[in-house]
Figure 1: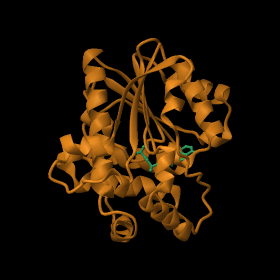
Figure 2: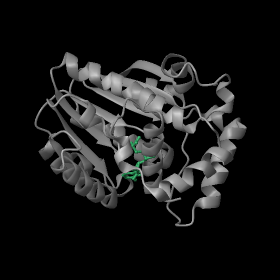
Figure 3: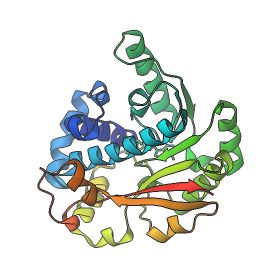
Length: 273
Ligand SMILES: C[S@@+](CC[C@H](N)C(=O)[O-])C[C@H]1O[C@@H](n2cnc3c(N)ncnc32)[C@H](O)[C@@H]1O
């Protein structure tokens, strides 16, 4: 599987549980080749993957909605934005800067422009920036983004990306965030805890990626301890949750009873000091 295919997969997951994700636009990205991948993933890794990704989306949607309502608008900067559609669910006083690899942002812009012209999406102020996080210094990333930032406060989202990066690139990104943000601005981030490496379900995930990595796309399968977030220079950890706990609120009817049997991701909200 190529890394960009993972963006199609998570978007399709959100469309499978619209009542949980609240993402009524995710289904626009659905396509037959992604639909063909999903039964194999569900069968080989875990049957809960679709609802867990929908829970993750719901968490960040609620966090960003409150942030932008309280601040009467602002800017969402989505690092590794894939095909996420938050900008259309948030009010129109929120500007969005979407950052991903070149092929993803080009394809996304083309489709979003088309669907907006066709009236399938509401009009929003969106800038698209193509950056490979592994190929640039902190200074280069900051200077390519600064011209696009016209209005605070800023919510930075880093969702579904850290698994694919190494620690050096991760540290660079958090230094970039510190340069871009002001006091009170927030970051939303997602990662696995290291102890997931001892679970069968995580071993099945890695095996699936290894067996299906026919393109040699580099990916790191990074896990991150809580204390990484507790010690980020310039930020304090405002909120921490995980998909297992949130499933009790957002998807109580799903049969999720054991956190060790699911790919349980941890969700963090940091605030700039
Ligand atoms: C699993 S998708 C998640 C997409 C979106 N954030 C979401 O949750 O729906 C991972 C995304 O990270 C992007 N990504 C991975 N490595 C990257 C890198 N080195 N530079 C820029 N984007 C990267 C991929 O292109 C892909 O769109």
